[in-house]
Image (cartoon, rainbow, N blue to C red; front, top):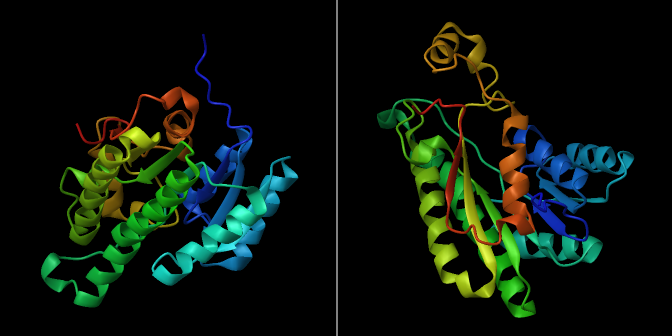
Length: 252
C-alpha cells in the first residue's frame, strides 16, 4: 500500500515563506491538499505567495510575522486559525546567518541569529503545541535544521550553534509530547542554492566548495519534497524525535 501523504483537510503554518525554502514548502504542502498560512516579514511577498497558491487551486492565508517579536506569535497564529482552522502542521523554516570568523561576530549579530533560528522556533512550537494539547488534537511540527547541527561549517559558527540547539529542542519536545500525539522532527538539509546563499556560490571559493562535495553539485529545493511531505503526513505517525539528513551526501 502506498504511504498516505495526502494532506487534504489539514492546516499548515509555514514561517519564512516569502522566498527560498519557505515559499517552496508552502506551495508543496498546498499542492498536497493542505490549507497553508504563509508567514514572514515582507507583506507584499506574502500576498504574492498566497495568490500563487490560490491560483493553482489551493487555499492560503498571508499572515505577516517577524518571528523575533515574541509578542506577535500568538496573534499571528490566531489570525491563521481564524482563516484556516486549527493548525495541524507547523514548519519552522525562518532563519538567517552571519558570515565571518567567530572572534569578529558581534553580540548583536549573535543574538539576532539565536532569536531568529532558535528562540523563535521554540516559541512557535510551544505555542502551537499548547493549542494542540488543549484541543486534544494530534499534529506535526517540522523544524528546519541543517547539517550544521552536527558538523562544523566554517565561517558560520553562530548558525551552527543555533541549528544544534534546534536539533536538541526537537528531541526534547518530541519526548515531552510523545503521549499527546504531537510528532516533532527536524529536517537537516545540506547546501541548497537559495536567496540566502546564492551569491556565495557564484564566487571562486563557493565554486571550490561545490567541487569538494562527493557529487560536485548543490542539492535542489525539490530534493526535500519527499521527506517534508512524509513528516507532515499520517504516514509519519511513528516518526518523532528524528533528525533527518537530506544533503545529497555532502556531509560524507
